[in-house]
Image 1 (cartoon, rainbow, N blue to C red):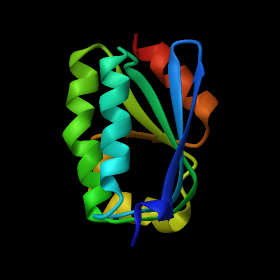
Image 2 (cartoon, helix red, strand yellow):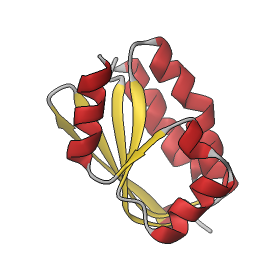
Image 3 (cartoon, rainbow, N blue to C red):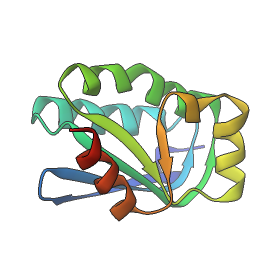
Image 4 (cartoon, rainbow, N blue to C red):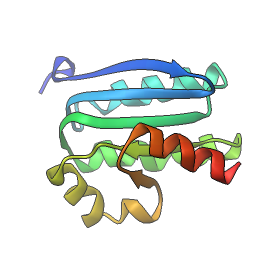
Length: 119
């Protein structure tokens, strides 16, 4: 699987950064998400929403990226929220217990409200 099979489209909305994930997030492509998280940390963009509407597949390596970075965002007063997961991707999140670690909500607006209610 090449890195071309996974893309991230980033947009900012006020203090939030929305990352629209597209394709397959696996061991080969996880570095793309890692790089994006590193860029956000260096720019002090700590309130991150990952939108999985176009995410077709996620492997444990992709989930590992969330686990590796979520504390770094939280240490800086931010967080990572996850939105718009397909049933297939939600199932993988559930199997590995990720909803206990990261907020999974329906929409980007719900994620922004969740950020505001915890700040």
